[in-house]
Length: 459
Image 1 (cartoon, helix red, strand yellow):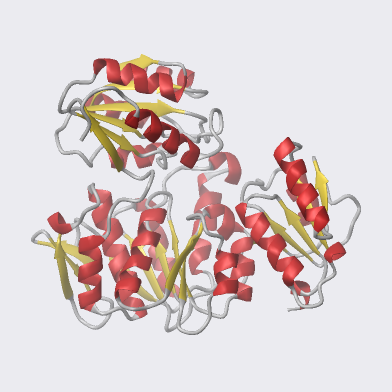
Image 2: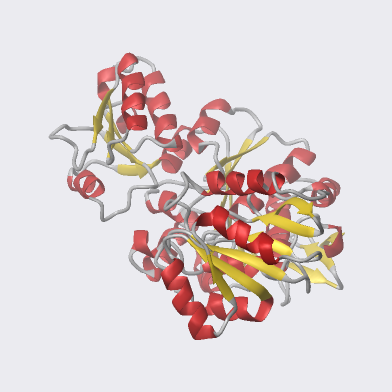
């Protein structure tokens, strides 16, 4: 493709932006002056990064709101830059193709892709698919929104390997040719409305995961979720084979008498009992069904899928057990950055009393249903952070028990002060972390470190 050989503008310098810079500079015969990075903000860290790029011959524009009058053949945009931001508006107005790092990865890749999206459960399902394929002896790389850029994986892998890509709505919004052989949609609930502008726009961007699928491809959709169920008919209409997933209704991937059963077109395969899974919660049963369907559709053996389901453990920051201190269990669910993720987490602990830590930066979500459900399930919720006033209003309206704290560590201390042996203290914030932390990982690791430093007998 001609645009892959010309001048490239890179919007943003996060993980995906750095991967694009590396690709652009490493192209055969590339002139470093044809690579320009535009960063919206101006921070000491960005200035240091710009200096490193200058040493390699690339130019950076810090604090940019447009393309500085320059012309390019391709623009690759960071998922962190919303469509309404001046820099993105200027890029689109230039008439040059504007794509995501995910789309670029697809164009560069020499191996097929399996893609996973959904409001919640993407990371667990992506990691589980890669785990199941590895059990089957397939060279599978989990990449994308999971942390390792898809473009880096695309440049590294060849032969019989496969990229299992966690795809955010931000990344999918800027895809054109992206065509995964197997595509998974887990759920669609309100999230990132501040970025997309509406739930309808958010849904349309999620649905792009199926846009280029044809006969021979597989579309896997959880039909228990109303949002994704509404998409399933359209996904199948493009010619891909539809595999439905449900934990409560008849479906291609389902639960029968407490056992996971999956049929991807070659007959039902009995896999493992629900109680053999090491990941908590009914939502993770659905994730396991979707992952098993994806792995089987890609060619993994039934025996390998069974073994992989039995051995897969919790991902960091996703209902991750941290420690039990003085009889109180502490769990890190920092990746729960929207209310629906918290609602799922509340189902993961049976009848054990819960003290839940909620707060951070709201992403345009309503907290009323969350407050009602927390009132029914939690002994106490500790509210903190930038969204504390909004959470407090919802909790007062619902009559749900709550306490207030200053910051996440203050919330942990408040929870420890009232927790009793047998309780679970759950960090499941329902919000983004950016009011206090660099990202959800920083928040989760701060929580984990503080828990491990608590006084008292630890198990």
